[in-house]
Length: 310
Image 1 (spheres, one colour):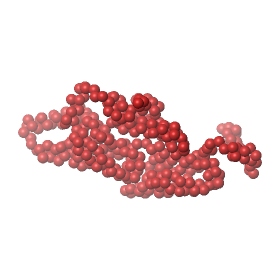
Image 2: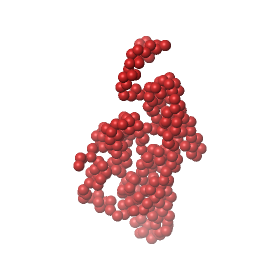
Image 3: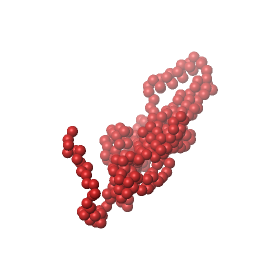
Image 4: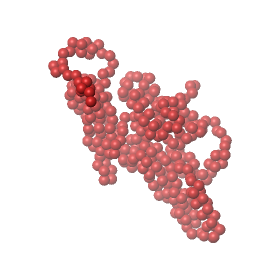
């Protein structure tokens, strides 16, 4: 069986690449190899799956960390266990270590001193007043469309509990959700702390978000650009039909009102902005023969402005 491809090599990024660099590399490769842009190409489809798998691993801080430490391989499968002092540090009671679909934040020394120091001091003084539990922080990677449209995702915590996390419509990257009473247990009958879940929104191969608006690059045939006509276009809410105006050039931007991020809170629904990219397609002998004999009624040089210089 072939060894899984290194995800860093698949995306063409360094091992210390930032999340922004990983997102940028993924978007570039996903557009290049997306099946919708390469109809009928098995090679492009296979490459797109590899790129998507690499991005899924590296965009999830927990999975990336486990891969870097050699705990899982490039396909996400468990690697042979390696024993170290971390096993003792991360044993039972370590609620902040490891969670399916979430990456817990590490404790600072101040947090540790505060928790244990106050605990021992309280007990020594005989202080049995109710104490609220500590808040616990996690990072959850959400799919782009889940963040846009809203979704419920189940989160498994280190102690085996599961939480159904409601991702609100229009959730933005870095937004923190508070699940009250789902954090550390209280002491002496005090209330539990809260679970604070930071949402990190994964990149999408087609869509880019800008506030309430969403943009994408839409490939169109030469005939569609010249003659105009209806085309199907993907949106966060599903595929819709829109009309391309005749004589549309590459770079022409079309807008679908209300087809961006849905309305939520006090914010209205955003728009979908589709920037056209004319695709010539495969070699066509008939088209080539037509263009050799074609005499345009109004000839113009598209590079005339460039020749004039700055």
